[in-house]
Picture 1 (cartoon, rainbow, N blue to C red):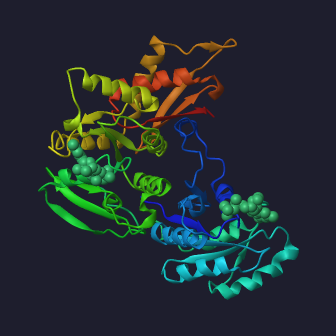
Picture 2: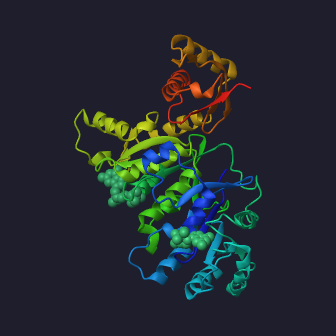
Picture 3: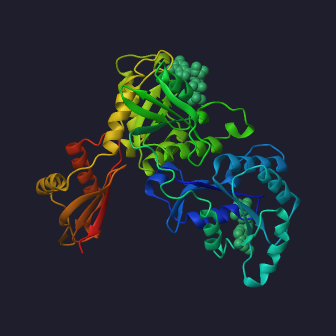
Amino acid sequence: MSKPTVAIVGRPNVGKSTIFNRIVGERISIVEDVAGVTRDRIYSSADWLSHDFNLIDTGGIDIGDEPFLEQIRLQAEIAIEEADVIIFLTNGREGVTDADEQVAKILYKTKKPVVLAVNKIDNPDMRDMIYDFYSLGFGDPYPISGSHGIGLGDLLDAVAEHFPEKGEVDEEEDVIRFSLIGRPNVGKSSLVNALLGEERVIVSDVAGTTTDAIDTTYEFEGQKYKIIDTAGMRKKGKVYENMEKYSVLRALKAIDRSDVVLIVLNGEEGIREQDKRIAGYAEEAGKGILFVVNKWDAVEKDEKTMNRFTEDIRKNFLFLDYAPIAFVSAKTKQRVKTLFDQIQMISENHAMRIQSSVLNEVIEDAVARNPAPSDKGRRLRIYYVTQVSVKPPVFIVFVNDPELMHFSYERFLQNRLRESFGFEGTPIRLITRARS
Ligand code: GDP
Ligand code: GDP
């Protein structure tokens, strides 16, 4: 199921990143931290009551040397392109400025819903300041205070009213959705072309869920696949297309909508920091992962080259040791067809459900062979394990005291599950709970 996307736009200093951080809250995870995803975050999942959505701070997309007005114009265009609902943020203390009017002018052109918010209304006495903002033509302005966390509930209620009904955007069950993610020029578009080859393309148009993402659906050996955001791989010639933050944003959105993510690396150039950041996000989002080393035709090889590259990947992506690696060439099409089998295998593992009886046998056996170490005289006791969800597989481990479950023992149990059930290519999660 894809989540709706909300973008915050507005001129500098109105409080966009303050609001972003407020709404997103503390979602920093270890994996994200290690991979450096949290630095200058401009995109994150968020929730409000029962609504899950993705949030973008367009102010964080650096548009280079363009003049001031051009920058905010481009940011507003990005919001229109990427979001389902737009929060237009202004500063109540300064009233309506020329720059606000410029933003408004761009937003008039979209049919997407725009919710107007007036920030820095830190106390009730200041509410009169919002009247000026009716002149922008977006209906009732919502008074908020980012620094005090006031009014955000009402604002998000208004935003959520524009979300599609749950169930409305459900995707077909029998389709495997995957995306190709990687730095510019690693060969993503070439790979898509090689993958599609002469295979029958069922549709290649705007598969409008809630966004304008363009997906390509096709069939290979009786299995339907959907390549997510094929359009993001084409060069569209917009000024902001080449901004790193923008391409990362596109990638993150595509990852969110995928079952399996192909992390495309350039065999000629090796691994870069940006590759790691994106991989970290795919892991965090709980997606199936396949490394694809492309341009293998252009690499000077001896019998050790593949092993060396494999080691390099394992060293750089420590938390992704379960992801298989394929060495391909989009140019010569070498091994490109084998990607389908891999994607299918990963997708099955990603959706695998293990019977509780079998699961508990494996865990009991693991514990018998390697009991949990005791901690200050107390020992972890595992009573029962059950799988609570798929995509990715999540297991709840009921124990006497969750504090006694240490990282290394959890890792051991995970590895036992992997050895027994072969979760190749998919992250799995263990949640430890006290038995009530
Ligand atoms: P951005 O450029 O739009 O992302 O704005 P920032 O989030 O960086 O905020 C700009 C400045 O406004 C910072 O100094 C914030 O602390 C301040 N600010 C943000 N929200 C509020 C608010 O609700 N009230 C007040 N008084 N200041 C705020
Ligand atoms: P994208 O930006 O990741 O979509 O990369 P493109 O598909 O546009 O490819 C970038 C460049 O790499 C183009 O000049 C391609 O011809 C070249 N390229 C792509 N795949 C291969 C490959 O397997 N081998 C070689 N030698 N070049 C490739």
